[in-house]
Image 1 (cartoon, rainbow, N blue to C red):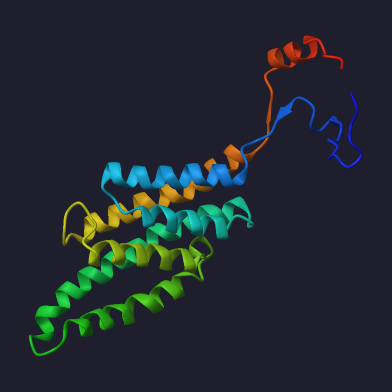
Image 2 (cartoon, rainbow, N blue to C red):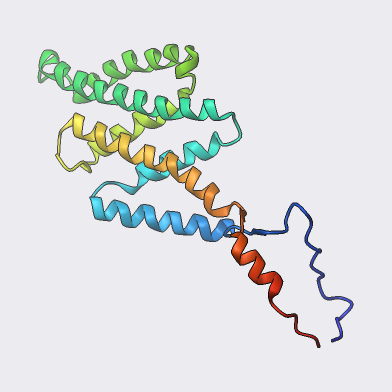
Length: 201
């Protein structure tokens, strides 16, 4: 058999690569997970963007130590709690402000309290991912104001949906890594491959 001189050559297997199978290409793995997010969101009637928010946040933090990544998950929940508190505070302030004051004033007052508290809490190492808190915060507001929670006008339901979807998104990074990572072949299959006769040209 003649090999064209311009044809790409496959590097011979080394001790590091022998006996291992390659993972899925990143494009295929990411597409499978993206479709899973959309189909899962439709099945459970929750917004898919919460999953993508959590996945994106985890991906942006993928280059930092594992302990720091666990901080992200905690901060997503904390931010969602702040978002829920903001919604509750807004609802409580509206009757106090009266009908002559626009509704957005209550929102501004609640945000003026929640925003500095989140940033101040970010100085504590365990809650050091301020962007994670803002993602959790924004997810709650988007779900609640968009009426996307199973129970409409329920801040608690919006909180539960936001936490569930963003944490699923965080887990997608681990699943993506597992899908694209090379894995050791089963010893029995390796023996079968070694015993397989080679075809000669």
